[in-house]
Length: 381
Image: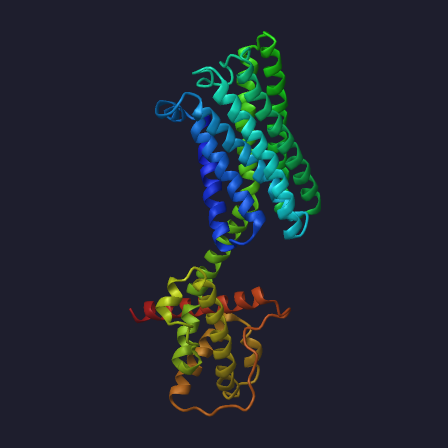
């Protein structure tokens, strides 16, 4: 169950980051995060039960070598995130090249160790590997020490940026920092285990299993931390999208009534209605367009309400149900050519002038129109 959970989290994080990268492909930090998570996922897949398939088509140990190279690459790319973020692009690229040379050197060392190791020496897990074989011990020790360096450095930079950031970015960075620090601790413990076993000692199985579980938890925390701010922002955007869609529908009775009186006030959507509906942010444009059309229609129809000449009517119009009745009467009077006043009257305008309150006033008026129309139908029945 834990294996499936870690895979699901990593796969989701990779998919999300690739989506973000497509929107900003020239951002080096964004690219580094995507490559870090992609390498971590690939390494995890190679280490899964499917991983030993590599050893059936090549010399034994190639699967283990590929898994560790991918893991080292993931640690390298997580360092690159901060190498680019902490300086200008030119300096960041130069520092990334230097770190890349160090990674290439480490990969070369563990590759030579893997090729020089006896056949089948690296086919098992790190827990079952024979560390008394020098090549095997060098393979795991060198890879582990580089991971320790890279993850510790990344954890330091992540904590530093978390202190300078605001929520929700800081929350995600703190989670990622804990995951990176946990990974560094695991690497340090594993290095001690390798040295002890190299000297002929034994490590209890419970300790090795515990370290493996901490590593899985650390990978999960890193993936969650790097994707949390974006996912939270997307969820907030979805909530706004649903709210705008709901209000757009609630304003329909008011919008239809005003468009019936002033059809020329309807704004033409760019690219046509069909294309506007197909776009992801089309709901927001339709929402704002409908609010503007309703407000414009109220300004125009208010001249008809003032022309009725009933003293005290303007005060009563502050109530949505009263204003709804007068609006229907004004639209009917417009069709019959009633006289127009020279001055517009503010209708359904909030006292504080807040945009959201303004929209709620329009929604209340639209709902009153809907209720009045429903009551009229019931009365006729």
